[in-house]
Image 1 (cartoon, rainbow, N blue to C red):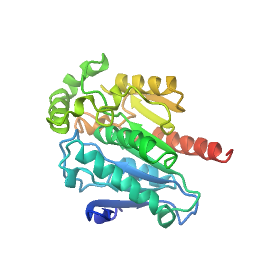
Image 2: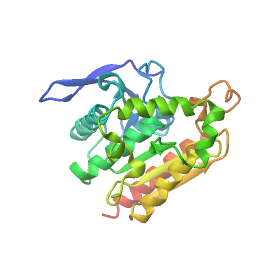
Image 3: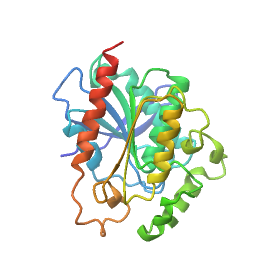
Length: 272
């Protein structure tokens, strides 16, 4: 069972708080990874009453997952949403021993719009909290406001083109975020030095091309990347059209990819 939403103070100076929920699969392990997770919703959804199946998969793999509801206090607009998400990371980093242990890996993760936020937080962490996070997990990240890739043409069939167009317009608004690398990571020109990434999409996902392009650009910048395109009906396109995907089973591959990524990070850190 998922825990209730609770308010967490994320900025002591200005007394800002945001809702969070904990999925604890760590069994009190001192080395269990700590994952800060951001949900999707196309920058439009503010109601996060249901527990996240993705966060639950991570927890079932032995992680302690903290789902931060950046949307409610920020109204899902840039830069407020990114600021709240980053404040959550800064808070969690300062309390890492409380949630995990001194040697626990710290990761950011998110799907769709939450994947955008996770990617933006990873970039900002590189700039303002160097070496504080160990990895980023991006599941079908919504990171390119141009929406011009070949695979994106399939968004019409899923009913998501209009929703994503509306979502981008809402998120970027008139604040000039269109050109800001934290708001549109797919257009970031300086990617070197960010945390290693696990980037997952599926063959029936309209966002797969922009995710693949981001993965390739990260690799070109010298970032360690694991990138996979899962078979159709094994991703999370049910977040776009639950009715059409009713016969799909939860992706066991997600748990395997997560555990493999964590193992690789642990082996990497043990060498230093």
